[in-house]
Length: 381
Image (cartoon, rainbow, N blue to C red):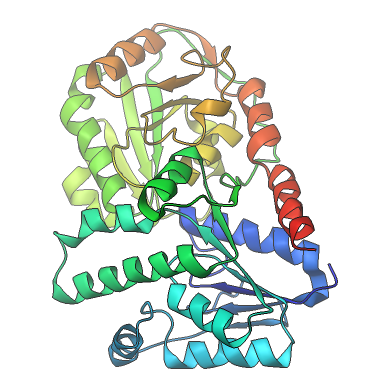
């Protein structure tokens, strides 16, 4: 592209979270498409993994700086220093397109359109925050409530002023319509890091204890999912299945969650060994928003997957009929989980499934989403 693009995010590059993974892949896709014409502001802590001379990163801010941002109608991450840096980049590099990796920066979007109406602003809605954050407000302290309300207010402005709006899936498309009385411009599903190392063609043998895996960072819906398994399923499959929980900072909950048949490993450097060892990946999630990177990751390893409506949102519609409830299972009750796990204990099956891997490559790979982003830039020409 011969246009100059400014990429703005509040998420560190290669952050160990689902959102961090998705944002990093978006960055890589756009960087490859714009090359030397792309500049970026990472309004967060510094990431040593980011090697880009056109990137500004390493912002730290005090509570007072966050309060200043909120009092001026911005989300906490858009401090005065970050806002000044963004405007300096816009002027210095003669920016044509601003791409914002969130939907909570609406006041900034409005200011850009007022001061530089020729700039095209593209925003990615990773959730419909007006819906998700409203569920958090009642459980938050005063300052958190003020912050959440500011971000909801900002998302409303993003929906109004951004030139192009992107959502993750059809559920969020419909939520956007309901909340903002308009339509997003594009649906771009989650970008999955596709496992490039061929998994071993091992099999689970009949009567061997099932090795289950749950992957998720320290985040309340993930904690609730493990609790649900412990309270509703674990005892009913005792001696037939064991669960390992891996995820950034989940070791904080080791005392609360670990017991016989359930191991909390928490933070690890590499998930590959855990996926290779696992017979089945489970994700009994019942709350949250957007799409779950843990689902994409498990499927990219070709693993048999048991998920709920929530953990399979954005995926189920692309699952071929021959895989539905045969290799990829959608189940929402403890009875369904228990019945299936008991059946799988008595069965022989492959730990790696090419059919699942191929579905991920076709629908959710970097290559697939690169084509979707190319459509955006073509539409802007």
